[in-house]
Image (cartoon, rainbow, N blue to C red):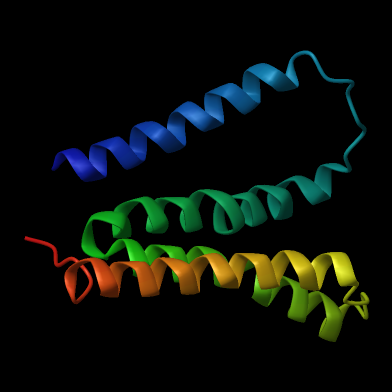
Length: 122
């Protein structure tokens, strides 16, 4: 196993341990026994699997690719919430997305002017 994969696994396990430790100091909530497998499955696909994929992909992409993908997550979440949950797109949400997209555009333009192209991986 190379150091990139090991670092990704350690980061995910460390975050899991910290959340578990924090849960010891939080109030308990009653959860139906039948919901536990669904919660575990949702946690695996929604948190662990996506974060591991992200951490393993970081060495394979440029900083611009990472910035664009990181910015698109909240954009898609906002649009899916609007479409499926009928949650309104407020000015605050749209402003946050616009600010994030402006940062990505700044990063892209700055990297093009600095070196003529984005950095390549060895």
